Figure (cartoon, chains in turn brown, yellow):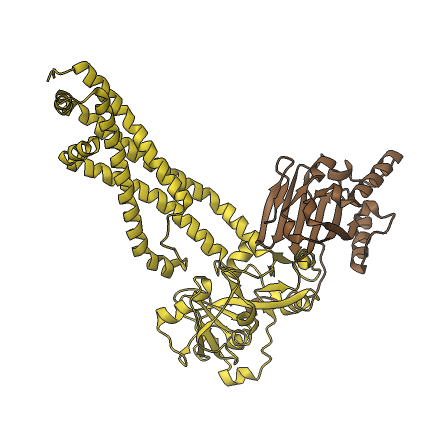
Length: 182
Length: 414
């Protein structure tokens, strides 16, 4: 019996390294009642074209441009007009955007960011999450990822979806970018 | 007219025709059977767990975590600390959690330690809760609730004592026979691995392992109750959230937990991954059965083709009584069509009887409930396609007979 033989792991903290694959991004989508939750995790290069801290003015303006795009999620996700969805909350996180404060930053996040600085990593991720409130959620039949057009460096997105029909995952590409929810 | 003639002509060659029918029947039964079992297994798999938002275990692969926590297949690579589990359970988004502890067995059936939440919150199929057919959920340390199959196969009644063995094998020499468990409840059948599980409390699992040294226990059942039976580790936990919106945040929180490497999976997504893995084998099987059908039809073609020369006289007689070459064509096509049609019909009967025979066996061996109703839309399409192909295949010898009867005219050179 493994239970007693296993030594209990003491509360030692260890470093964790997330996966990072250029061109590929992750999307989480959940629908519950009238709420629609969308969460995009992408290597920064997919959106920006680079991953280092902006060095030139050109890069600085690209970062600003991407930030603005990410702040208007309806340009990235097309929702059926009949569903009447309005943005309720959003948060944007990336060490590349750190000059400004976005959304809530809890303590742990700040610590993580500090870690990133210490290591001076060459890879960066962008994390964006959105909560929509839909007046007629029964019309929310699909979500289409227009972000493939906005960020052409994104080649594939693997999505985890929780809808009224259950949990499933699917691979999205510029050719098939619609997530059916019903 | 032609139909009647065809039937009579077929009857005249009944042995060959019957053998052809058999080969078509077998191939059709195989194709539909493979497709049916594939579907049933999939729905049985997806019905195993429902309503659970996340499964949390030690960090490994999502499919592996799903297999050992839900299907009781294989073993955990690691356990998770009770304190880590408590951290998750106390998270504000969490509505309920079911801790589970695996690793022991009873006469080949897995023993699972859990708590009352299991009976309250575990759902399978279409969000169906677990129901007891007799008795009550366990409340004491040395009490057990049996899955329906465990009780039926081993013939256990309420109040009986059972002994839990160390490890997961069918035969185990190290058993916890000094600390028997009393059967207090038997669950209704669910068609899931729950039926093949012996459920005891986490404290029960802890108690039988206290003082466990070199294959025997040094502490009696009563004394063990005096110890702190709070488990230090568990194998995995099922988690239900208040809102689906919070699932991903909690998943990330668990996956980035700083004190030990843990993994949280969405059971639906992991099931899909598992199915994608099995999909290759599944398509291969389906492909092979399709080729078997083709072989069956080719066999029929061979039989008709080979028979044509022997039947020149038959054709000539038909022509002499006024049949036109196109009637001969029709006759042979109808013949092929009828053979495939009856062959397919026979195949359906064969499959039905096989399923009726195999259903209880499959259920007891794998716990997968195979339904009898295999005629869905897609299978009807497959069947239609097979029969249509049969007719088309019949066209080949029919055209030959057509040409022969035109050329031969009334005179037969034998």
